[in-house]
Image 1 (cartoon, rainbow, N blue to C red):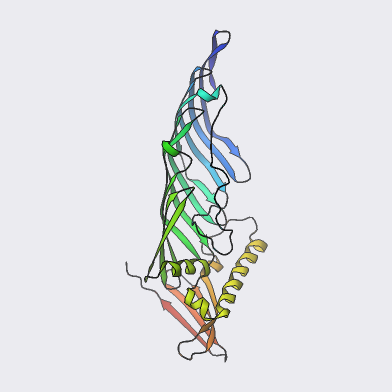
Image 2: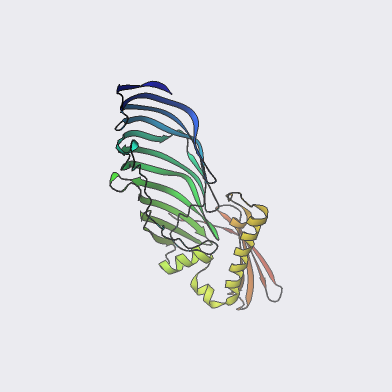
Length: 313
């Protein structure tokens, strides 16, 4: 920091300060580590100074469970509205009447690491307003983000959070994601605001909204669930296995892409269309094109298949 503080009057200080930093640690707690390159100038009277310059986030990460889908799914608590509207303000002097004109950018993506989502975020924001009523204008773009679902992954192909000076702490959402469950490709569109998010689900081949949500929540359709209690038991056992595995072997670690549980799917109690008898089915996703399927019937008959998936866009 360089500059000076002068006193034209004994009770009135004049600021002329320049603050520069290189990967300085500006915040650290259990869920956030933030570093930034900064070039900030503070000039003017102590009670109404002007703050201008640029802040570039670098080497930063968020270790928090960010739930990108505003629906309740097994294995996670149902989304709850915030207890109070988030606010950020300096109601007391001298910061109350300071004026801000600061660009907030990302030198490299802010990493997001958690059990519900992984990826990065790039920001292009402008901090304006006063200390009493600061404003944010601009956007945060999600980069290579994957959301964790109980029985699949949701790849966010396009994700932008828009901030407006009119309501800076309730940004607008525009997220598009895709998830592949069995032979269904599910598209998710999340919109609205951070305080009131909404979601639209579509699928290929087409399914009703209720069936799509059932696929996301349980990995199977409502018809399959109601057809046999064993199917529901198999889903619950699979989910329990995932949770135990993460608690015992991956405690405190973020989820990893393409883990065994992401690619393995087990159904118990489904009906074999060839024989009409119950069977257990296991599917293992080798890659986006090949899936290995194994069936075993109540009589011990076993069948193995290698499926090649062709998707039309």
